[in-house]
Amino acid sequence: MTSDALTSPRTDDPRVERTRAAVIEAASDLLVADGPSAITHVNVAAAANVSRTTVYTHWPTQADLLRDTIESLGKVPMRLDELTGVLRDDLDLLCTHLVSDLTDEQRAPMIVNMMERSLHDPTVAEVRNEFFHAFADVFRHVIQTAISDGEIRADIDLDRAIASLFGSLLFGRFMSPNHFDTEFADGVIDDFVRLNAPR
Image (cartoon, rainbow, N blue to C red; front, side):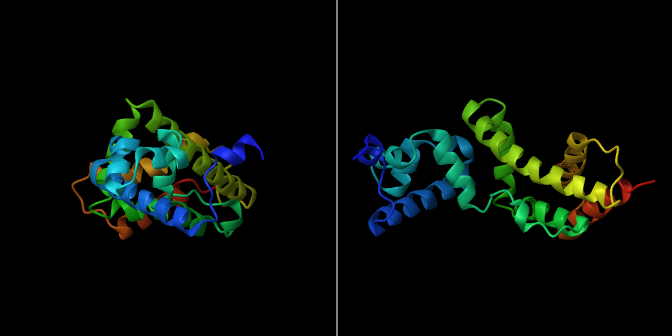
């Protein structure tokens, strides 16, 4: 038996799975209510009514715990095989989680918390960067496919394109006096496609 087998928690035991689910559910509630700074082994163990050792066994680092908590809320970047190959549809798919959160009064503040906390907390920044890079890879694939299909101009700057699209959504939700809803978000995506079409 290897040392890994001795130290890794079993995943085929229903009791273990129930414990993991309870911990992640408690962590998700903390994340939505109090932001990423609340996702510590101590806080999550207390909220889930389990020992800190249990939490550390399954999530050795705070980054592991925060990553799985975010993923439990459905914040998993799209896979390339989920794309349709249609520019407007794929941009809509890419934006759907963010738009859903921005239109939710409980989850929208979580985004602000994540952005602010990542400026001061290396763990939050690490997890944010992982999700961003995974998302950016899919976004680049969508844009490069659209360039090949003649739907997007070939000289588009991919980093500025991400900032333009998602910055517009964040501006619309947090800085504009106008009401932010799915119709507003659809308009942002439509404008992005129109403004970046080949001339």
